Image 1 (cartoon, rainbow, N blue to C red):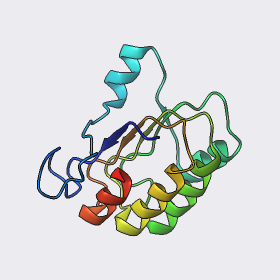
Image 2 (image 1 turned 30 degrees about the horizontal axis):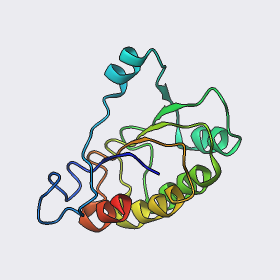
Image 3 (image 1 turned 90 degrees about the horizontal axis):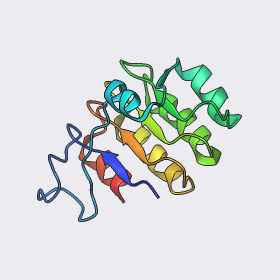
Length: 138
């Protein structure tokens, strides 16, 4: 189950806001800070390489950042979602500053219902809107 959803800047301002589902948790993972604190290495990849390595369950890929428009569309998010569905290694995913959209967020949310490994998801400024944020939170 996804323990920490980064929903800030996505249409849900904070836990307990009128738009927020009761189980929404807001937590923004700072890749560099969290990685340094935990001693884990944040890996920065392009989308195609990330999808390939996630699909292969690459054991070295536990913390992934696809930041600054690496994911350009709902189709890109759907490809990522399909890779996440069966992945058993990734614990942290940073999708900050992407153009995922509500449909992409819904695809990711569906995939995460089958993924018990991912514990931190950062969607800050990824244009998922309130509907996408609610799908992730549920």
